Length: 255
Image (cartoon, rainbow, N blue to C red):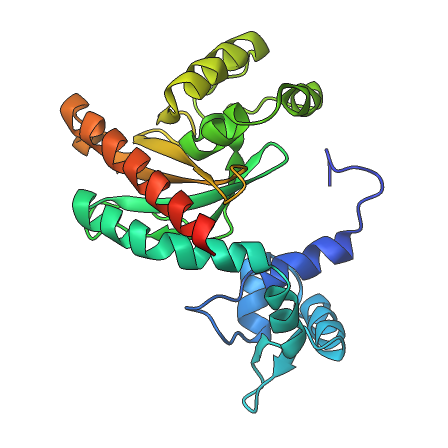
């Protein structure tokens, strides 16, 4: 595929894509459905499934469908920090969604990506759909920007040196000087906003979560359609989000 590094293994990428199709909603999937979702031939999907089943990453059910296997659960159990984060964050996130009626998200930083590890959808008819595991350029999200702003200067310099700017909307920041100035402002005030920078029609506000050692580990945000994002509303949400981040940080300090 154009633009992919020469060392990349397409079969490994396809196997990873396949595994990520399984979720709480889609616990079991068949060959035809996986082939349709991934845009691959059924014979290719058959081979991927057989290999992953041999490695216990998948199990085959009696009806010919597949589900995640024991090896996946064993790997998941090794991600202890995220388990602790989940337990500390979810009650506070539920309270934030109740207070705002909007979509609430929890994200971590991976390189220059903001990765959503928890998500509570808005009960409104007009809502913002995405999946846990979604990656977005950190520079375009409130969670990503507040996490970048918390990096040590030398770490931020290293990441920006390898940064390839992305511009999903006309509002996205692509200039390094502008980004650095914005990150300094965010570091001073303790929260970040996203003004239709990752998706047109959506704004958000996010705040930093720290662990018991005071290290930045995640960020929580509220995402709102612009039709419900009046200035007074967003000021209120900013206070609620920063308060929620503090609550989660205190809970993490107790784990």
